[in-house]
Every structure is written in C-alpha cells, then in structure tokens.
Amino acid sequence: MRLSSQQIFTSGLNGILDAQARVHRLQNQISTGKRIATPADDPVASAQSLSLNQELSKTDQYDKNASRAENRLNIEETTLSTIEQVLQRVRELAIQAGDGAYNLEDRRSIAAEIDQRLQQLLGLANTTDEEGQHIFAGFQAGQVPFVAAPGGGFNYQGDEGQLFLKVADNIDVAVSDSGKRLFLDVNDPLNFSASPAVGNTGTVSVANQAVINQAAFDAFHPDGATITFDTTGPVPTYSVTRVSNGAVINGGNPVVPLTAIPYTAGDAIEFEGVHVELTGVPANGDTVDVVSQAQQKLGLLSAVEKLASGLQVLGDNPAQRVQLGELIADSLISLDRSQANILRAEAQVGARLNTIDDVRTNNQNTNLINKQILSELEDLDLAEAISSLSFQSTILEATQQTFVRVSNLSLFNFLR
Image (cartoon, rainbow, N blue to C red; front, side, top):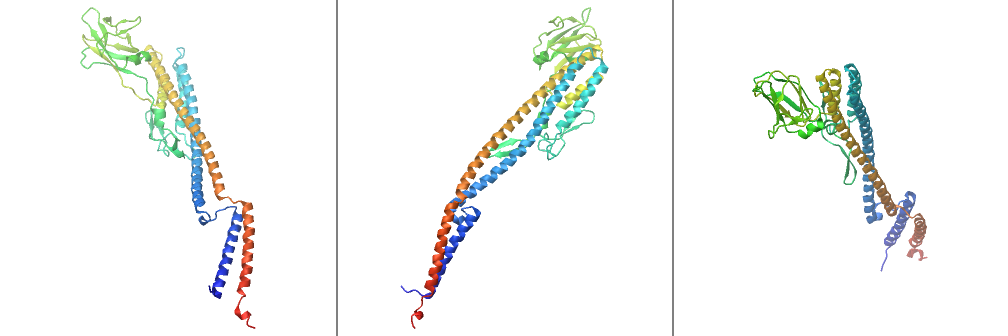
C-alpha cells in the first residue's frame, strides 16, 4: 500500500485532533462536575435527564401553587373562625333580648351592639387575600361581594364560582368559596300567612300572627288551615280544619278539638304552633285562610339586620311581645343554621389544608428520588475522570511525538 506524504500528514493531524478533543471533553467534565455536556456524550441518558428536569420544574411549580393555596386557605380559615365567634356573640345577645324583664330601651341597647357586629360581619364577608382578591366573591374576585342595599338588606355581587389551584398531577384544590353558598343559602324558618277570604261579607281581619312553636309548625307544614265562622247561634263560633283533608284541628290551652269555639274579637287562636289574633265582626260562613309559605332563604347578614331592626321597634304590649318572641326564635334558628354552615366550611377548608400538606410531602419525596436518579445520570465520577484525563493526556503526547518523527521521514534525507 502506497502512502503519500499528504496522507501521512492528514492521518497524523487527525489523530492529534481526536486526542485533543478527548482531553478537552474530560477537562470540561471535571470543571463542571457533569458527565453529560451535550446530548452526543450519552444520547439515552441525555433524554432521561431532560425528562427528569422537566418533572422537577413541574413539581417546583406545584410547590409554588401549594404555598399560594395554603396562604389563601389560611386566610379563609381565620376569617370563618372569626365569623363563627361573632355569630356566637350575636346569639348570646338575642337570648338576652328575649328576657321578659327587659324593656324597649334595654333591647335598643342590645340592638346597638348587634348593629356593630353586623358591620363586623360585613367586613369579614368582604375579606381579601394578600393580592387584594375577595375570597368570597367566586370568580368575581375583583368585585366587592356584599354591599348594603338601599332600604335594607344586602346585595351579593359575586357569583357561585370556585377557584382551584393544581398542586399535583390530577389534584386540584379549591382556594375559595362562594359567598352565596356560605352566607345566602341559609333556610329561613318556615312561616305562614293568615288573611280573610276574598268573598267574606263581615269585617273580620287579622290583627296579629306569629309562629310560637317552630317545631310544631314545621311538622304541620306544608299543610294549611281554614278558620270558618258560624253566626247562626246566639254566640258567633269558629272551627279550624285542615286544608288537606278537612279534619278538625286540635288546639288551644288546654288542647281541645277546635270546633264550635266561641269567638271574641282579639282573642288568640292557637294550633300547630300557629298564633292568630282576629278582630272585627264575622258574617256567617266567613273564613280566614292560614297558608303555609314556601321555604325562603334569608342571608346571614339580613337575618342579623332583621334582628337588630326588630329589637329597635317592638314594644311591650301583648301583641308586640308575641312578635318579639317569634323574632327571637326565628333569629336563633337562622343563627344556628348559619353557624352550622360556617362550621361545615371550616371543616372543608381544614380538609383542603391537609390535602396540601400530604401533596407537598409527596412532591418533596418525588423530587428527592428524581434528583438522585438525575445525579446518577449526570454527575461525574471524579476519580475515574482524572484517571482518564491522565491516560488521554499521555496518548496525546505520544501522538504528537510520533507525528513529529514520521513527518521528518523523507527519501531526500537519505540521498546524501
């Protein structure tokens, strides 16, 4: 085989360059501490390393989401706990206002504190997070959820949406609750309305009406009653029958069947937790309809406002005392239901915080495993690399010396 001088020089130069490249690669690995500088160093390990780095980056983002979710939920948990405490205080004031020894002025003093508690509740319902977003406004987090309405009551300007943050693959944690669900979706105590029938010819009218025994009325609801007058005898009488089947209803004190009961204007007719006071002179066959009303929802803020307003105006005459008793009873039921709603929400928030703790622990463990695998793929065995560098440096030096010797070989050196 014939070798030209050009081939000798090219082969020798390529050998030197290859040796230099190997030395350079080892020097670069030692300086960075990494075995893989480019995908060409180890294509399989490089692909695995890329996948692991993406997984670590995703887990880091999940951890940031978990921290943000935890902050929002901690704010919500603290707010709900404070609301529960305020409701407990309002409940104590309502019970105090029902004391028969208190007069109107005493109740007005209590109402003044309830008004202050109402403003506190309004502020809590409009709580914002560290970014100024309202936590009880649903998707309308930039909007103040609750505002006082002209003439009384409160308007809700949020929606029923619920914000979520992803804290792990397939795990989304709710970081808000709708103010509508927490503060508006509270059932008002069942009630009724009493009114003279349209076709009456007498002057009988309803002077006062109230639910005086909520449990008894709840059992009677949704049935209704008809009070029918009979004036054919020497004394006007009335009978009370069920709307559903026409059966006579028992009532009064002592309890008797309410049929042919003598009527006196202003007397109370009581049955199934219902209290109705009638005035005027009925004609024969006149009726008064007692109709159970459909279930209504009264917001927490409106219930507290209603309590404060009632305590400001209800006096001490017998009729107003009955209305006061119903107001106190209804308010206590609304407050108890609201507290139960808040306690359920607190439990849900606690469960979400526990989920975040569990997910964060799992993410940390996953990160640790991924980093260990990544280290095995990327990190350099320093002792082995230094040994290889020494070996490759020797090869480079030998290659250079060999090239020098071979490059000096020429026929002309022997023609002397």
